[in-house]
Length: 218
Image 1 (cartoon, rainbow, N blue to C red):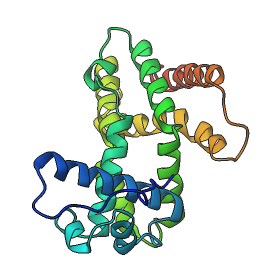
Image 2: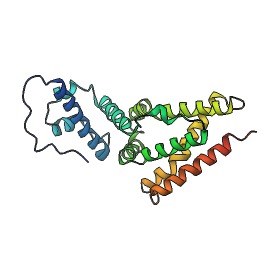
Image 3: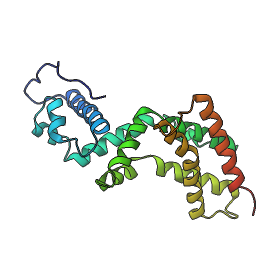
Image 4: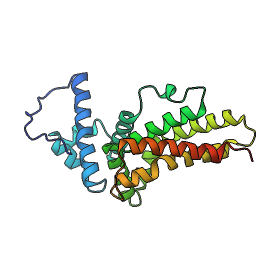
């Protein structure tokens, strides 16, 4: 939802303090997030963001070079808010299945938040017309980090006997896709959204299938 700023008092002149500058940046990002997620990337203009923030475009350009940089900041903040506080601990543990189940549940819960779904809808709708959006998501998203860590765990578990770095990365990508794809589609209206208990069962089944397919000796 676009944050309402219509009742705010006019901004005072002069150079803002550090705290005020941070608040202005957060306000811009709040407004831009609402506009990007409700109107789309193409329909969102710097003029509309500045107008809703009750600031001049000059003030805006002191903080963001262009719309692509603004979108990058929106994606970065959205991803950071979805990221668990202890990322390292998420991948630690002696039992590989336990670690994968922990990852699967976390990834699934994060992917089905309203913010993640709104971002996914936006990318699907407009990435073809605005390829810079996909580039931003690839750079700012946490998927690559998850793939790298899962691939490393997979190689460690198999001790490199039949899983190469390339195939480990491929398997990690497939694991994330197995966990997220269908629950996400259902959450976006292509089926009945999963309840929490159903998501937990889905995560367990995804981990079991992944382990059976990837860790069974050829």
